[in-house]
Length: 252
Image (cartoon, one colour):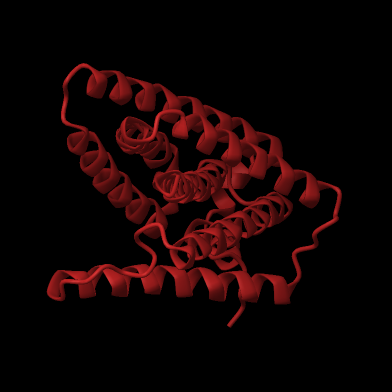
């Protein structure tokens, strides 16, 4: 088994298979995936996400139920992720739609946290932005190299985190208890720090897969596919920063 990226959107095999099965499309259009094209689409998705996040925040502050946006946006966004994952050719449509609905989710959950801990959201946004820039610089200047060992460790840790979250959630449905990653104990804070580190390390895998996708001459629609994968990682990182900062704030 070849470990590449824990993000299901950025698997090397998915890029390679798409390139092979769409050679006639590439030949006809003379267009292939590029790093600059992926960056442009990532910025487009970010702007779309921010626009609906601001909209949902404004609506919540004017009396609308935040759960409508948080649950609705989150569920629809997840469905769009599944659709694009199984059929990458839909990415030019599912990726922008994902950004819009995920923005509703982000706006909803941000409004909830901000109501409990004023000033928390700007801290989480800043932390996410700085983390992204640091990781990008470390990757760009080859200070951190994405080796096979690096990939396997990050993938394994990411899978373990999601398995832990899933098991904790399912167990809580049948047993009345508080998972150790909830609350504001030092253990819970430590888990959040660990999860943030792993989420940040996933950015290196995302950058690496985008670069490799461009080098392998993947079809043009894979730019949307890759941009969507990068956005998923950033959303995960932001939500984890919200959780960590809220735990620290509740201890004050």
